Image (cartoon, rainbow, N blue to C red; front, top):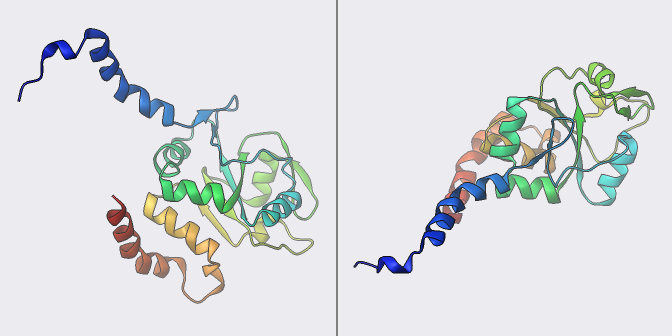
Length: 201
């Protein structure tokens, strides 16, 4: 069946050609003046770890710190390819309280043990060497410990969608308290997760 060519005017053709190009750009996370991605699920705080933990707990969420740096290609991969997936995005928005820190930044951070240092010095104290690095914290942290000691899981690097989704769920379900380590959990849950995503297509 042929459609009359008169139905498609030149402005309509130009608009249709521009549409696929404009949609992906609008979906990309914004970049801040510090060169880091700024997603809506990030919380801008005073970077006082105890205050952030309390705010996360009051909201019924788990505290996560994500370390990034300007020009980090793996940070870009996480934000533009992994964090935009609905399952990941929903966990970041609804179940985690995420605070972003800059590996080479100078904003003051107050540790759980009360020590206050700039971001780059705090990164050295906590042993952060790669970006992105994700630090996950328990609902409660005892007095006198640092964030590096308090973290229940520290994940350096950006992994693919399925690994990230299962790690986030394992942390939220407190799998680290059980006998099944993450590698076994991921292997067990991967087929189920893939089947769920396929059925949702």
